[in-house]
Image (cartoon, rainbow, N blue to C red):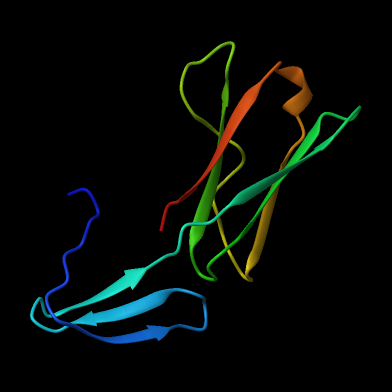
Length: 111
């Protein structure tokens, strides 16, 4: 399944305290939870090999930050362990950022 949902008489909608959007779908007999796409900002500290990624999070969701070395691409590697957001601001720091000429980062929701 590709994650696309088709609504058949959507009826109710509410924004939960954790920021997620809940919708009832009458004839599909479902309650759908929608997480709005988020933007990750990146802050680099010259001279000390630090990069900090920050984003707005949904409280209770678990996030995993991953990175890939552009010059030695063997796939995505985890940056630390997954963590569950306890407030609406999340961040993670890569203290090895200066050891690779270029890195790509991504943040995924695991739960």
